[in-house]
Image (cartoon, rainbow, N blue to C red; front, side):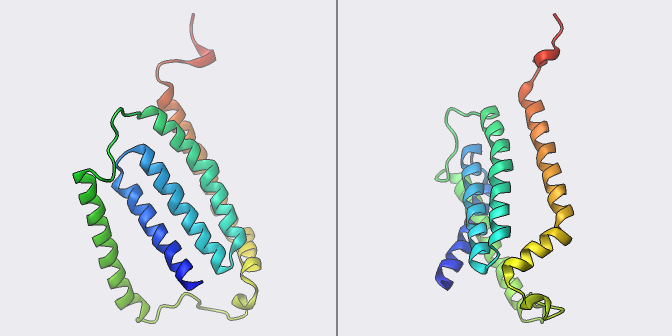
Length: 173
């Protein structure tokens, strides 16, 4: 189980490195879906199945619509791949940064006394599924509304960029 969890976390890091290297919108969308799927799988393995499912639906519902519009806007005949020289240099640079930041985090934060579970032990004695639902409806509700608003704003911006000079039903004769 621990090996699968570590592989999912490695998939999250590699998926987001694939997005950051940005060879083409096609590969960026695929990398984001892969990273989000691995991250939600790691949440589900940790016991937060409700939050993992909710985040996966938000990623699939919101981000894939935006990526569909961006892929249609930036269609390349010969897109860059991860095997190209400059993209490979970007990937190597991001992997190096991840390892350096990870080493710093392990040395300073992990052994510095900052724990993940601080505060009341009663709050964390509840099952993780109920804890995630409780946090979603208390503190996280406003954040979900803000995330939804941001996704809708991004969708409208992409639709406005794709539309161009065509006015749709509001055209002048």
